[in-house]
Amino acid sequence: MSHSSTQINKHLKSLQKHLADEHPDNPTLAKAVKSFRKMDYVGHSMGLLNKDESYATCVTWWPMIAVLGTFSAGKSTYINSYLNIPLQRTVIRLSMINLQLFATATMMSQKHSLA
Image (tube, rainbow, N blue to C red; front, side, top):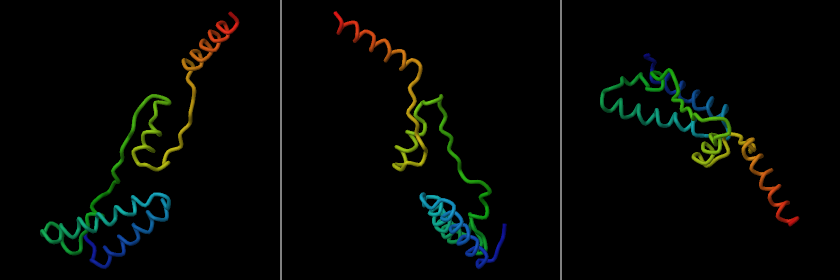
C-alpha cells in the first residue's frame, strides 16, 4: 500500500493516538508504533521500502498470543505474573477435590481432638 510520507506520518500518529486512547493503562501497544517507525527507518535506509511506504500499512493483523489451559489452571495468574501488571482478572476457586480434601482433613482433625 503506497501513501505519501505526509499521509504515512498522519496514519502513524493517528494509530498511536487510537491505541493510547483505547488502552490507557497499557501503553505497550502505542509503543509498538515507535517500533514501526524504527523498522521503517531501516527499511528506507536499506532500500526495502520507498519513502512513501511504512511497515505499519503492510501489517493487516496484530500478533496474538493464546494461553491455553483447563479451567482454573492459572492462565490469568501466569499472564499477570509474566507482564508484571494485573491485566487479567483472577478468581480463586476451590475445586471439588480441594473441598473434599478439606472436608476429610477437618473430619480427621475433629476425630483426633475428640480422642
